[in-house]
Image 1 (cartoon, rainbow, N blue to C red):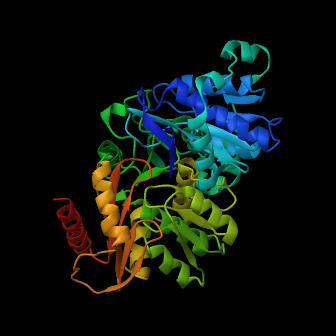
Image 2: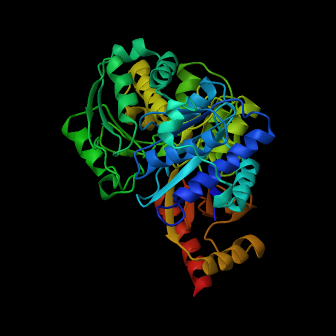
Amino acid sequence: MIEFGTGGWRAIIGDGFTKANVQRLTCAVARRMKREDVADRSFVIGYDRRFLSREAAQWAAEVMAGEGIHVLLVNRSAPTPLIMFSVQYYGLPYGMAVTASHNPALYNGIKLFTKGGRDASEDVTASVGAEANAVSEADIQAVPYARAVAEGLVQEINPQNQYIDAIIRGVNMDAIRSRNLRIILDPMYGVSQTSLQTILLTARCDVSVIHERHDTLFGGRLPAPNVDTLGALQATVLEKHADIGIATDGDADRLGIIDDEGHFVHPNQVLVLLYYYLLKYKGWHGPAVRNLATTHLLDRVAAAFGETCYEVPVGFKHISAAMKEHNAVIGGESSGGLTVRGHINGKDGIYAATLLVEMLSVTGRRLSELLREIYATFGSAYMTEHDWPFDEEEKQKLCQLLLVDKKLPAFAVPVVGTNYMDGCKVLFENGWLIARFSGTEPRLRVFCEMPERAEAERLSRVMEEFLKSALA
């Protein structure tokens, strides 16, 4: 069955991710376009470096051509934010990227975008998924790829220059040029290198790259830039005395940062740093948006500048929708995705990385110094993250316990509130904890943020032991 999660449709290659399912899903999108009377518009398709991504993009193009819908296919592996930019740039109603983002190498998938280059909303993906599951192989009409290109039904494009130029126009390149920053880039065998390296070299940065080759197994690691996967980047930053280390996930919509002292900078800290920089140093005005598993330190920064921070469920489509509604300056999530007003309507690790480099250049400060300034001004906040897999029977038991019976363990600190918007969120006087099911993998995640890391770990263990005892 084709089922969309918070980050698109993802499935194990050869199991759920098959040619038949890719074509069924594409057929459902084509039918939707016809019902909405936008089939006379083009449909953009892009793909990342995963196994079968290029082939799957062509399978999708063949179905669109068979349905009489013109296709713009990006003719090389490309960042997901570039595909979102292309939907917006060409003024198209729909587009897709073949990617499983930061999932393990045995996964692939599809992200669907709507007008303006936005992540498709839940009602759209639910409808497309249901229709795709009803499509039979006999319903699928496809034009072989080579013939579709020859007949003009599919047009191969490369909008990379337009995308890069849009980012360059949105940052202070003169300030970056003046600093001669030394930067280490880790694309994690993904698709960010060409775009990000081009931008940084244009700004006269000294750029070294690791893990740049095409490897569909991602070096045997998870292509997610977190504290457990960036050891090589950390070592290279220290070895070369770099100003910053920048990593992006498999499709480059998320980023991970190593500071000048070799410390991992949590995505929560990146989000707070950029919001603080945009308000204090660039003089921007406006609220912020975060999902409910992202730092409340962002709320403190917003309040200090007379602004508001809005909370939404997990899934970047909720963040981009709230940003539009409230004309927010920035929106982001603790997993490393963020976007800024005036750029694309979705997360972009390449743009976020460039803006961080601008921040270092304009302020003339080291990243470690800016982080200490944040904590000295707004107080400390440390997040712990734990997760474990579950089967369907265990999920039902946990759902009953947390979301139906709404039972909680006995915490050592008073509970001042609860929130069931997306999972079970427990509010304490000086922090919070949430237990929720991942929308991209069969895993239960527990996040906790408190002023001290040890306290966050203690509270997380209390919740974990409570949940595990319920399954015993």
